[in-house]
Amino acid sequence: MIKLIAIDMDGTLLNSKKQLLEETKQYFKEFHHKDTETLLVLCTGRPETGIRPYLKDLGYLEENHYIISQNGANIYESQTGNRIMDAFVDSSAIQKWIQLGKEHDISVMGGGVDYYYSFDQEPTEWMEYDVKIINGEIKRITIEESLTTDFYKILLLGDEEQLNEFEKMIPDSWRDEFYVVRSQKYLIEVLKKGINKAYGLKKLAQKLNITRNEIAAIGDAANDIEMLQYAGLAIAMGNATEEVKNLCDIVTDTNENNGVIKAIERVITEKL
Image 1 (cartoon, helix red, strand yellow):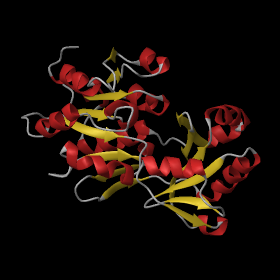
Image 2: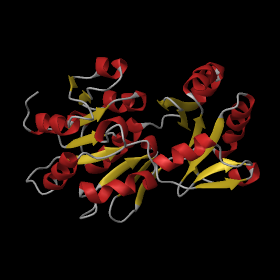
Image 3: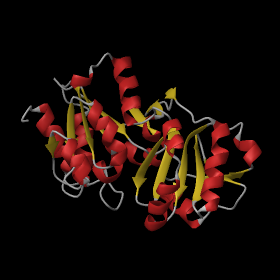
């Protein structure tokens, strides 16, 4: 029996306009009142500020629900905001990413607990674009101040072609040192080595005494891969990348056509 369904947000729960479909809002609110042991857990790369605007519509503020944010680097409670787990990047390592970004005209931000940070520069258009999507706020700090600031991740931003070339410039040794993932066409995220959505999901499952065979996961993109590989049942969205579809057990409908609802219904009715 599936006891926990981990659900990505962008490209999965949200449509292409970053909105919840009305059917999704209604379904989630009703689901929380069903006589079921299955938990619906948001598992996203977004920070808490980028998740908060959706919680009321999903019924996650009526009682506490666990949420995995920051690509697995944080777990918190939806109602109280209590942080259950944090995994921060080594702040001293940020300087080399800043330097590499400058050399290739890539915007570099730090993703902190309450804010996003620019380093010794005014926020660029790419920074402002990303932070607007996630309902965040950018603060400017010095390199020296960054050494005493907690960061869940480093964000590298630019247009698609820029990042395609930039990815080739990342030394292999750095990839051994960090978890590096292209989460959006315009965004590369860098986290502490071993930290990804599967890590956060595993930590939460251990806390709840749930085995991986009792977990299903739904996703669409590269930063969902580890989570999908960890879960006992992997479900790809109809709009997922081919790489994601190929590793999943099931392909549901798209994020424009209630793919998440259809997947959940298949899981809880065991029509697999």
